[in-house]
Length: 47
Image (cartoon, rainbow, N blue to C red):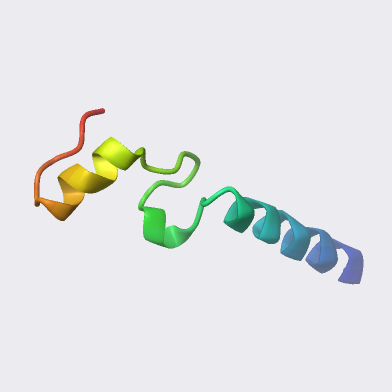
């Protein structure tokens, strides 16, 4: 069980290094700069 937890921790670190965090509001794709700016202005980002 320890090795699964260790692999999971490395996987989470890998996702963090790509910018795929819960704060980015997407589970698999980080928001583009254009979408981030739209959210800051209170608009819906393009999909």
